Length: 138
Image (tube, rainbow, N blue to C red; front, side, top):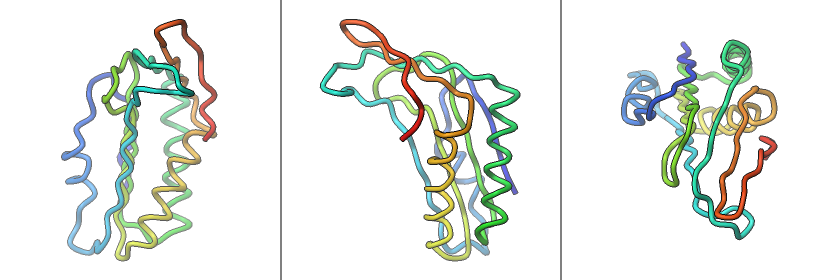
């Protein structure tokens, strides 16, 4: 089962975790990306996320389908926020449940790494002294 969304409001972390829980799952791995206050020693004021939404959702579904083929996971959730986010806010939540922790860990890491490489979501960092579009690659 999958739950894939691009959202323009704050992400609900407890709801995301609750969605992936199931009686057959012995392990749940959750990645929560947050807006940090410093990048390359520069103070971050805010981030702005934009997406080509239809394509982004399609690519996120491909990642989830790939995960379901590669690992014995029960559920995978990928939620990404767009819009203006302040320091401390959450732009991405990935949650994966599986019978065993190893599959959940591996699938979650693969999901965030692949998302950053392939999904058309762009991030602009706003600093005290300027701004810059950031390559999404880790």
